[in-house]
Image (cartoon, rainbow over all chains, first blue to last red; front, side):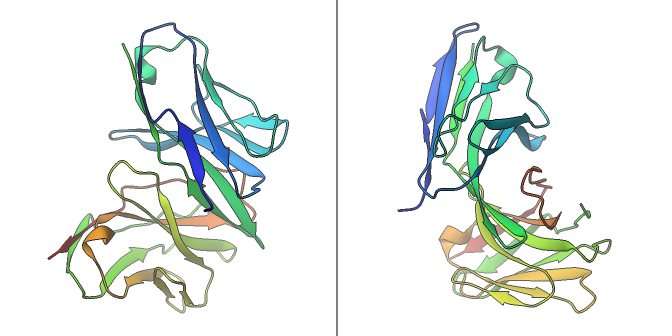
Length: 114
Length: 112
């Protein structure tokens, strides 16, 4: 089944404790991205990657890192999480068809930082 | 990207067609209309997209007016599982590296 998977789905952690949220897609998509969703603010892009070893900042990159060593994986790293990073996180990958892109989202990771 | 306007909420009886409108009066010639939906706290789901011709897939149909200033997403036989927030998004072509901009969308409630 074609899908984007994220792990963990739920995480409660403490301020300053490094964590990684994994994202994997099995559709051979080149483009992947991370969003966070907060009440009243909608979905905002954190980082994106156009291909292996190519990453760039989105709208809210502060406090996050990413890497793209393989096409299928795009982990999100929080080196020193803070309470304002409590949010619902979505990973997405894109399929290009002609001049358009269809984005496919993972199930989400609900992160709470205390 | 062009701005879109959608009703805040709509109701639809189960088994009936759900018609969700979207206005995008400032759309330009190289902008596509996309529809996504988000069921409560799940990841957004791609539904359909089009440029100027009507489109149909296994999930829905997209009707775009001739002047392209508005469109309608049609779910032909709505079920309770179609209850979600539906987002109409206009994006320029070749915009893969730009984020999707989700507005407030339309909250569709399918009622038994």
